[in-house]
Amino acid sequence: MKKITLLLLSLFCLSFAAEAQKKTRILFLLDGSGSMYAKMQTETRISAAKRLLSNMVDSLRNVKDVEIGLRIYGHTSPSSKQDCHDTKLEVGFSPKNHDEMLGVIKSLSPKGTTLIAHSLQEAAYDFPKDNNARNVIILITDGLEECKGDPCAVSEALQRQGVVLKPFIIGLGGGQDFGQFFECVGRYFDASTESEFENILGVVVSQAINETTAQVNLLDVHGIAIETNVNMTFYDAKSKRIIHNFIHTMNDRGVPDTLTIDPSFTYDVTVHTIPPVHKNGVKVIPGRHNIIPIDAPQGELLLNVDGVTSYANLQAIIRKPGEDKTLHVQPFNKKQKLIVGRYDLEILTVPRIYLYNVPIEQSKTANVSIPQPGKLHLIGNTEYFGAIYQMKGNRLEWVIDIDNTLKRQIITLQPGEYKLIYRMKKVTKTYLTVEKVFEIQSGGSTHLNLF
Image (cartoon, rainbow, N blue to C red):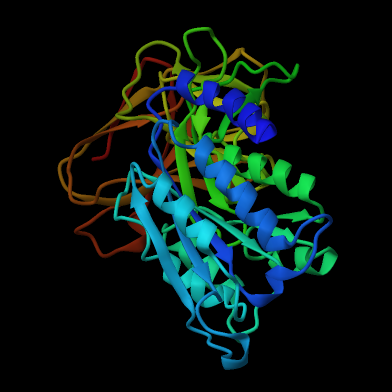
């Protein structure tokens, strides 16, 4: 009793210091099958379970925001009947049910079989409907499933539906086989002796009561946790279902803020930087503060135009070198954080500008400037078919079509030499095609008469 009280007291102090903790409901699911009369060391398994569970119930009397309940299985029908429905909620959840629970525990006499899957399934209905509560099952058993149920499937369904956190299982004298069997059901603890049972029960209840917290350290190139203000998605590594989304924040002390997370899962974490970074197989220790380091070094990219631009909403496509996939489309005159590295840029000017292996360095701003464009004024007295080209070696490269519904138009182009090839829309003679070479200067205007 003293060990349990000291362990719980130290962890309860942490609970009271934390901000507005959710209510926790703990359902003790106790094996009442006939095999519980087997000896541990100096006493039977059922005797040790009754004594230690009673001590635990007493210790929980004055713990804030914790309610307990008791479901027992295999305790009303003899084993000869193999009653696979012999499970009952003996004490429901309420604020002051401790004496009632102690009385039920004291009068318990094991009798029947082990029906874990059905008991877990029924336990889902024992918890009041409360979206703000943490529902925990602590299963205490000395046997494996004997009723052809599938505890793994039931446990997974309860977790997936959000009914309970991943159950805790305390196996009494089960050994390695128990651990392998219950691995898929919940967090398994093996208790071969009375003292192990006492210690494990205290640890399990403490983990159930105290919220599991984490601090995500987004590291720069020097391993310092300075990166922040980005969304992080925590996926269940098994089902790939989204469990948490958090916008990373620094607290008032300038360190990554503390998160409350569900310890039931192994997580795959995605940090939504550009490009995103991933850390898979993240496990947290229940009831403790966990630190999760993730490399996410970032710098900034700023795009601008020398002088005044005539482009509306000019943007650039950002890609990894040698890849076709678009990472981001960045507006000009706006900074964008990127993971440290090199990037290829496709700037959506006319014609397009391609820049390769642009370096992004830690906590620095890469300033990319492009020349100010000029304007081409096309002046005609009718409508025209045609396009503008650039000479690349001895070959023409298309730049842009002219609008064949307009007599006059203005086109914004980057500085350089071009060729306009056109024909009046109304004529039907191919040989009337016209070619004109012209030059565009930064900030200047070039006029071409088409008639």
